[in-house]
Image 1 (cartoon, rainbow, N blue to C red):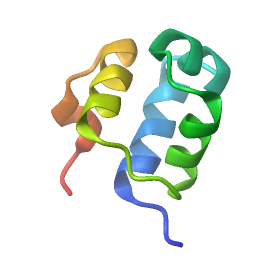
Image 2: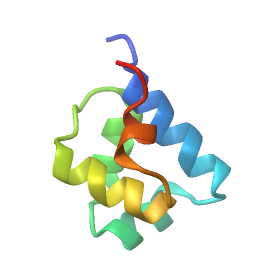
Image 3: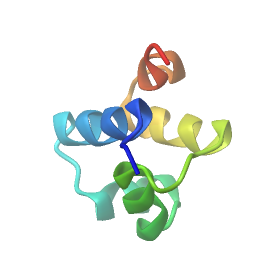
Image 4: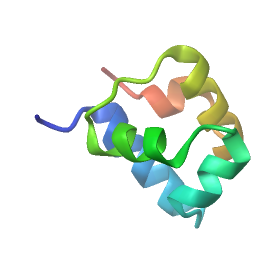
Length: 68
């Protein structure tokens, strides 16, 4: 399965903020398994999940979603 733009962006912004998957998981209350599958591109997150992730990363939902 080809990685989606959103999976690449979640991973890139997480790394820019210096967070591990575990730290992002704890801060968003989203399981680490879900975070990992989003970053691998095997799970497409809904808007609620993306909003939580964007909030923790300190970016807007639009920034996280990029131009898809």
